[in-house]
Amino acid sequence: MRTPPHATSSAAARAAFRSGLAEPTAGWADGHTQANLIAVPVDWAYDVLLFAQRNPRPCPVLDVTEPGGFTTPLAPGADLRTDLPRYRVWHDGRPVDEPTDVTGVWRDDLVAFLIGCSFTFEGALRAAGVPLRHVEQGRNVAMYVTNRQCRPAGRLRGPLVVSMRPIPADLVATAHRLTALMPAVHGAPVHVGDPAELGITDPARPDFGDPCTAHEGDVPVFWACGVTPQAALAASAPPFAITHAPGHMLVTDVRDEEYRVL
Image (cartoon, rainbow, N blue to C red; front, side, top):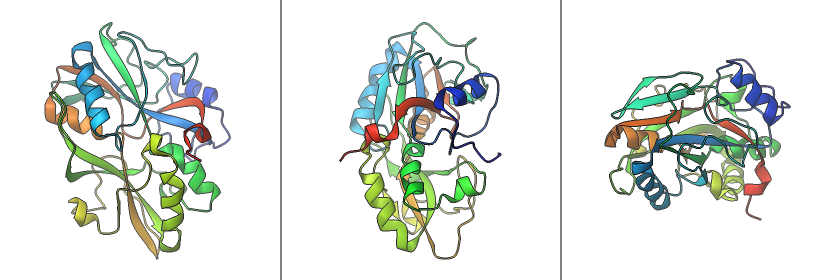
């Protein structure tokens, strides 16, 4: 993964991904909100909505489409079928493909949910001098399935997924304070310190994303992650779904500060 162009506009980022560029979106279009995608048949949509309502830390809903819809006011002119860099297509709880365009498999009965993403608060961390090791190292953020179970909803159940960023010990309080101001994009960390307390036995082998090299004095800090609904798909096996590939988000036109609680 190359170093992302922080100054790129949100529209330019989406155009690049629509043209076939496939790479994680961390660091792209600095200052613009990013969103996770999960699209399910309409008869599963209430289960997803209820699951999100019961588990707001990993699943903060930013927008929901009408059945068959593939546009959003978060990014006027964007197409949810083409403008993310990579997708996952699911059958019976298993990802069967990771295309860069899902126009050919999009269905008229799909309801799409856009869920807040922790990449959104990274601009605030960067501005405060908090280093982002995965961006520095040109890697996708590391994500882990934990031993914490989400609250079930309808037919959906599954574990909490977290993203991890190594943060210098003297900046952990700053990272906590800044991210707590943005609950719509996961908010404050859910855990700081020993990964084993979350059931993570080998931090060097994330379940999604890439391992990240910590610097001396860094502490692992974990945030609730919008890949959590994908863990629920795997556990609950709906017949069909489309999601983003972990780390490959929709870059919206909404400015980060619009989701900051003052």
